[in-house]
Image (cartoon, rainbow, N blue to C red; front, side):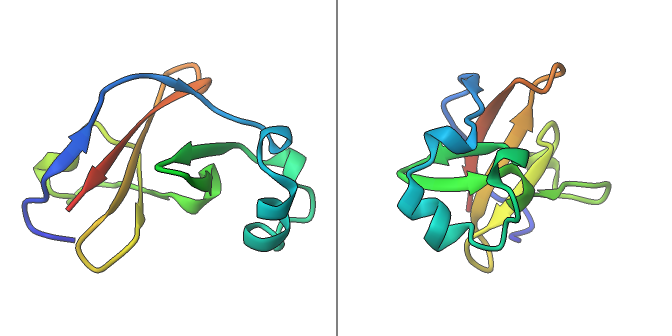
Length: 98
């Protein structure tokens, strides 16, 4: 991750999705490792499906630009997707760092 990544987000809260919302083909191809997809929470960002379990928790020592974000999913050496989860766990905000 870059020392001072640039974070881009629309700041809007979105609803999590269930396995019922994910196309069956995507479940078979991308999430075939899941014993029961109904036990997982999903989201879609830029036409790509993610499971909440794809994100690693952001802990102490992260760059200041990531303050307030709960998790990250790297898609390259210096870029990836960020997630912030609402206090009730029902919604999320999504962003991109590079």
